[in-house]
Image (tube, rainbow, N blue to C red; front, side, top):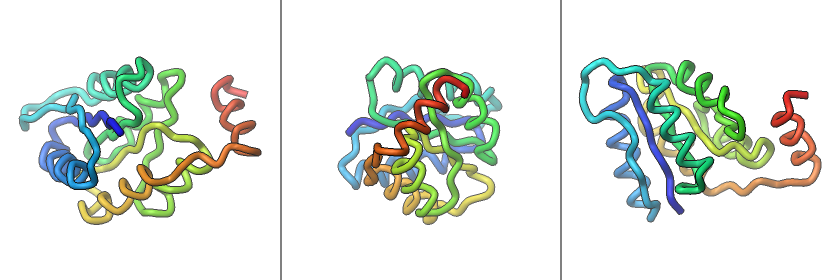
Length: 144
């Protein structure tokens, strides 16, 4: 499994922890995030991660900003992306199972790293259930 990760300046250390954790899980990580604390614009990093997903360079994406709100809103503006801002394991698994989300977002300033790790693990280990959920995902894609 290949996962793209992107972050702004508020998520550098958080990203580094999640990259290390994913590698421990055997996940190949592609880093699109900034590695400095210099102020940057999170939409630029969201776009890079989402393009990697749409171009099938990676399977999933992880996005990090201060709250996770702005970067997830940005990602969800891109057709074909279903980003979920998650803050517990249940949300991490249910967004994959029911929404076939391909991006998970975190807020580095509002969610502890250990909770983020367990939430990310649930996200990566959960399969999309399909069935009645596919009909709903299809409606999301057309804006219906």
